[in-house]
Image 1 (cartoon, rainbow, N blue to C red):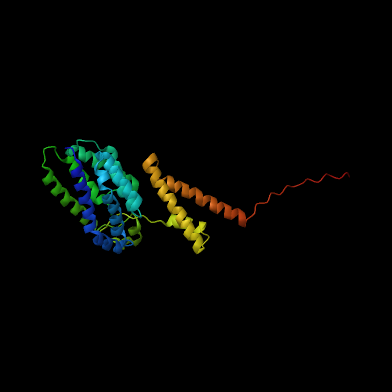
Image 2 (cartoon, rainbow, N blue to C red):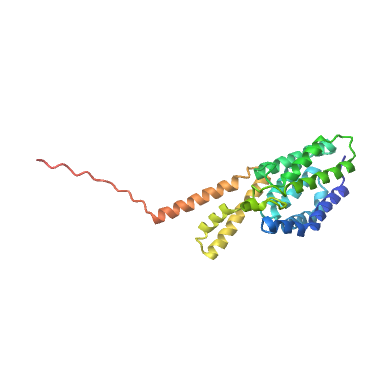
Amino acid sequence: MTLDTAMKKRLIAAAAEAIFAHTEELSELDRAIGDGDHGLNMKRGFEAVLADADNLAGKPLGEMLKGAGTHLVMTIGGASGPLYGSLLLAMGKAAAEPADIPGIARIFAEGVEAVRKRGKSDAGEKTMLEVLLPVSRRLSAAGAEERAADLAAELCTIADQGLESTRPMRATKGRASFLGERSIGHLDPGVSSGYGFTAIIVAFLGRLNPIGILIAGLFLALTFIGGEAAQITMKVSPDLTKVFQGILLFYVLACDSLIVYRVRFIHSVRKPAHAA
């Protein structure tokens, strides 16, 4: 099955419309165990993808997916942008046309594996993998002779079941994990990471001064953006940003220590022995 330009545009539009239709629902779910901005973040990301639909749809499938993933990384805040971006970027790298059902299953499996590695998570941790993994397994088990419409309907049912399965789970990843037992009973709208480590760096760089913290926050934001761009264009490890920030924090603390506690080198001079 080869996707023509018109079909690609319909796929982009359908994905964007699904997010737009559930923006408030996603934000409402996020208010219970997060900071309540997941729906708006996702909407912003897919607005960027939709705005570039004409350009994306004219590219081969792999380039289209990578282009959409890049938009999501650059426009969705929090952890969702890198996670959904990683999904599409990995799918784009694995994509080939024409794409039959086994081929689509392989492409999707590569994307899910990228999400697993990016989030350092697995099934049973109340994350988006509770939906992605069972959908990927069913898709991989599908035969080339199965009707696409019937398979799509079954995959939607499996996705709904995966979402519902997160309700009794205790969150162990992201901001929701801070709620502990209180996260049980809520559906998880996505994955969100705590940025406590980054906050520590911002506080030290800004010297706890409001203006300094603002400048430090902007500087750290650039390191995140630069790290994501390097991951996409140069295929470097996603941990590169954390390594850079760790080195930065080390030198800030080292400089502070040397300023407060001056190191003084004392040379002892041996007095000559007096003759008896």
